[in-house]
Amino acid sequence: MKLHFSRDNAANDLIEVDINQLIIAGWTGRDREAIMHHISELEALGVHQPSAVPLFYRVATNQLSQQQQIEVVGGNTSGEAEPFVFTHQGELYVSLASDHTDRQLETHSVALSKQICVKPVAHQAWRMREVAAHWDQLILRAWIREQGEWVLYQEGTLCALRTPFDLLENYLAGQPLPENGLAMTCGTLAAIGGIRPATEFRMALVDEQRGCSITHHYRSVELPIIA
Image (cartoon, rainbow, N blue to C red; front, top):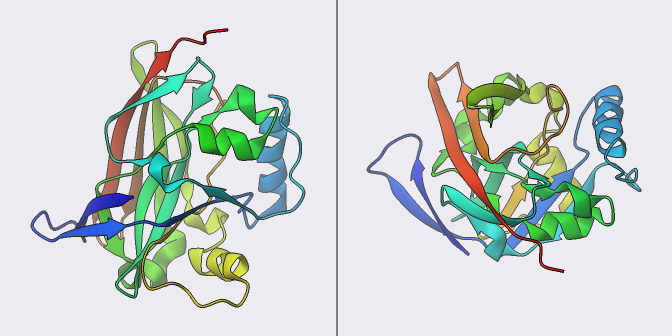
């Protein structure tokens, strides 16, 4: 799956990335209490507890999209802002994605719910080497539109989540990091006010130290469920 990014917030520095392996990392919090809080959020929706933490779900790369509109089946889907890392020409990059998920299907199978929805991805990326030293200070935010107003839905620093280096090491289990084509979403933060559907989702990854951010906004169009 080919994605295109402006690199390091320079509009004229564009890269084309061919993703051939996509992993959704789940249950990635460093704080076990925070992990259990997120598990409780999902249990309230009927989702069973995970067998281990973290877990790594393989998802088809054709589910990645940089469009600002996606199509979903039914009205029980919602987004989750997550750091998105990928390899390109021997270098690790960071961007931003939404692990958009069908919450009703999630009560039957988390793996299938991850597969069924398109994963929106931002158009900007940073070299990991530019942010690795202050990774924990990066801020992740998301908003949903409710009753015509933007409402803060997620907010926190990445110190709440395992680092991409830790997650990649766990996933690769001693295998070398591919020079190209590997992409991973790195987990999410608890939803403010609980997980709930919304047709418009806005997200940002903010680097206050360098004074820049990665942003993306998308809307979902509901397709009818035909029995």
